Amino acid sequence: MKQADVVIVGGGMVGSLLALNLARRLCCSIVMIEAQSIDPSQGSMSELSFDGRSTALSRTTSLHLQQLGLWPEVLHHAAPITSIHVSQRGGWGRFRLDAGEEQVDAFGFVIENAGFGSVLSRAVAACPEIEVWAPCQVEQVEVQAGTTLLHVPGRMSIQTGLMVAADGAFSRLRTALGIAVEQHDYGQKAIVCNVRLSHAREGLALERFVGEEILAVLPRVDGSRALIWTAPTKQADALMRMNPTQFGRELQLRLGPALGRVYDHTKPVAYSLERIIATQQVQPGRVILGNAAHFLHPVAGQGFNLCVRDVLALVNVVEEQARLGKPLGELAALEGYVAGRRRDQQIITSFSDTLVRFFTWNQPGLMHLRSVGLAGLDIIPGSKKILARMTMGAV
Image (cartoon, rainbow, N blue to C red; front, side):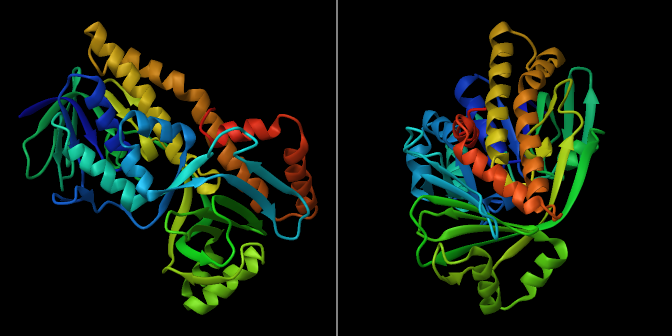
């Protein structure tokens, strides 16, 4: 049986960042267990979080990646967001944020998941403190006094004083530990693809509300745009059945003329949208992290950035435990981590949920109310600064 100070189950973006931060700041043994395979020549994982989608990185997240020494590589795959426009079709209200007005060079960046995953995986592979088991799955979890024992087929069992489950929204480990979730099905799907637009301005992130649909158009480093098109499930399914020409025509109708002509797009992929919140994030010697702890609607683009702030807070707690010579998984310390993260998590979770409900609820008079709300945000003193700070990850 193998012993490790920390075992991380899940080697996606959150699990990898946690492993790298722990390795940098603590003298401890770390094992990361990943269900998908790793290409040793490239260091890239064929995991779902590293697919053809893109992720919005807040300014705070980008600064952390600089501190880790990863930013020069990450920047090759990242496009800056220098302006944000929010509007609704048929409504007169508009909301705009400009990085120059907020005295920053960018609110954040949009990164290709595949490129980001490659950077993270190479960094993990180059770190001698991190041992990666992949492809492997945890088959059974045994909770013992002060430790957790994981049984991994094809490998020896591993015992640890701190186990972190970062294995995604539908976490098998969370279920194995008996942790329930609060779950809400939005009855929507997100259609994701990359599009090319004839007049999209560099650095512009656009969010457009069209009836019960939400369209987010984000800059990409190759000049194309990442599209996240949220629609009710039946409508999304109908869009997915369309041929490329029909799909492009429907997208053009919703975007209007502001970004020019839609002249190309990659094959769209659809994902069901739910809000999944773990009712418990810690147990003695065990932490639920990342999407396993809170899986949010993508409307606000802050889910991953919230997870990064969780990672940094957890590392601070574990580092303090090590400094004091106390068990890394001591329950009182882990409960302190949860208490410290509660406000940030509640703000982002509530903001994301309220935003999607407010802008997709089709009731008479609501379009006018939404226009008033958007216009108010655009002109009320201080409102832009608050939203800019939230966008940049400074909650």
